[in-house]
Image 1 (tube, rainbow, N blue to C red):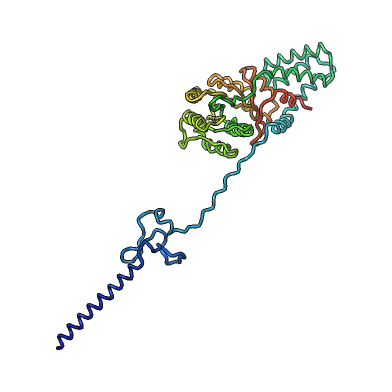
Image 2 (cartoon, rainbow, N blue to C red):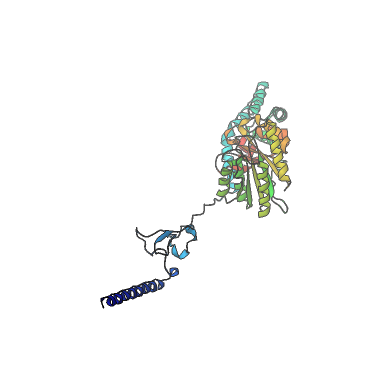
Amino acid sequence: METSVLITFIVLAVVLVGLVGTLLVSGRKLTPKKTRRLYPETRDADDQPPGAAEGEDGDTLVADRPAAEAPEAAVEAPEAEAEAAPAVETPEPVASRLARLRARLVKSNNVFGKSLLALLSRDEIDEDVWEEIEETLLMADLGTDSTMELVDTLRERVTVEGSKDPQRVRAMLHEELVKLIDPEFDRRLTVTADGRPAVVLVVGVNGVGKTTTVGKLARVLVAEDKDVILGAADTFRAAAAEQLTTWGSRVGVPTVSSDVEGADPASVAYDAVDKGTELETDVVLVDTAGRLQNKANLMDELGKVKRVVEKKSEVDEVLLVLDATTGQNGLNQAKVFSEAVNVTGIVLTKLDGTARGGIVVAIQKQLGVPVKLIGLGEGPDDLAPFDTESFVDALLED
């Protein structure tokens, strides 16, 4: 009897345990996995981070997959604030730049003009006076040939007219300087081409400000409503590409460069022209590495840059950047660069820091190439087209 009661008790216990287990399983099925969040709406210190998941036993496991693959609904990160776009500067119009730069040129070159006018206005202009005039012109880097030509012409005119009136003497000197600088040169930049971008190659020795000039020139062209793209083919100077990119971004101009330091500059220049063609831009400005004119291998490399670019497009301008303060040394640079890449125009920088305005005459006379642009300061808009009449006016301004 006792045995049968014991057996009955055991059977009832087994049935009861099974019933409880069934209820537990049914309870889990009421909340399927796919309807549960990986973590609650409001997390506290004990909650698991995003990317966690439950195991079959209900424990939390760190997911093997990247957090980025977690369901979007499970992540409620705050919206990232949009980065403010860099402000694009509006370059100063050409006309106002010319007026301001002329005033700066007057300030730096008035000693030159005043010296000549004082000498030519003396009551008696003897041989000693003419020698002083000649010396003044030579010191202004006018060049020997141009100096002798100007002195001979002035001697003749002063003798024939016999005038000592300062205004008349100034008018004579103005006329002869304009003739020397030669207003017949075509000083316009070739920045228009049919069916393709105009290509401008900028060259020069180290330290004359080529990259800065390219940036300033981009501003000039943007002010003239030109679409421009820059090519950072100076691949050897640290941060040259970054510097050029900064100049371009200030006026909304893109820059093509290489991520590899010391990359082939010809390849970068070619890519810039190729990109300019693809984007149908008006002008491609290519910055090149500075090089000494007496290094034959570097000059050969510069020639290669031009040849490679010409496989894609004609090079419309080769602008040689010269530092006006270097004087006659600039003439030697100009000659070598012209032989290597056929220079079409001169950019004369730092003209506000010298009274040697005569370098304009000397360069043009030796190369037969016009000065097209002048730089007169450190500001972003301190680059302007060269104008003969304005330049001579500034030289002789009271």
